[in-house]
Length: 107
Length: 183
Image 1 (cartoon, chains in turn orange, green):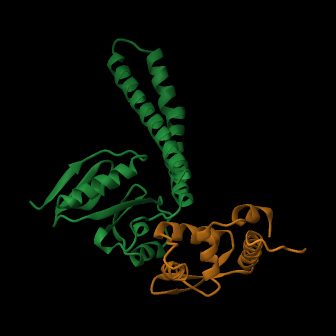
Image 2 (cartoon, chains in turn green, blue; image 1 turned 60 degrees about the vertical axis):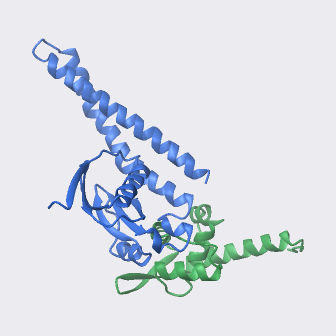
Image 3 (cartoon, each protein chain N blue to C red; image 1 turned 90 degrees about the vertical axis):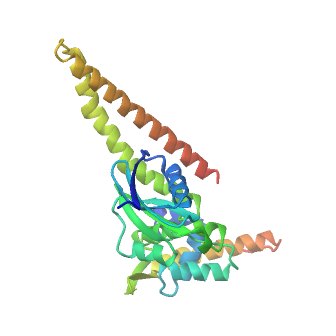
């Protein structure tokens, strides 16, 4: 992972994290939004413009790639680089969570 | 057609929030937007008064084919476009949450749109002003004879108007950017 990707995506916004997380399976924009709404109990809503902008940017930066098209909807899927970013973020969030609970982390 | 009317209203590139509010007001008075013609003509059609949210996105023709499909999936009706701006609407009765009436759900994407407007609209206008309009208007003042006095006055007024619009839009876009950053 180069420093530019690191600077932009680590740490990620909550919307960005959930979008990347959902794209471990191929999905289109509105499908991601529905899924995120469901798994966050309606707490996180990602609007159309934000979804479109984030997907375009992540595709340009190589975190996700176009998978196929279904009824005029573009489906995307995470790439190897995307997985690397997601993995780094998950480890960071896990550490954050453990520390906030007062659990000690041993290197 | 008598159930259609044309209205003239000027909004700058920095007044899109006011434009959204104005279109919402027109719809609640029973006039729905049909199309826009640059720079400031709006065609409305008589309709049942309704509470409808209007939103503008600035894409400057960079949107791809799936863009409209995505907005449609989210329940936004595409009304039309006007110099890079895309107009969407959604009835308030269809909203099932507060954020559902927005096309941007985080400050970062709102700021991204403003930066796009600054880069592709404000900067080119500023460059044209500095390289063409300003030098021409200065040289016309310097060589001013009686015959060209009227022309010089008109040109000066136009230059001032242009300058005023650039400063107004620049300051307002910066203010909007700060507002979104604090959200």
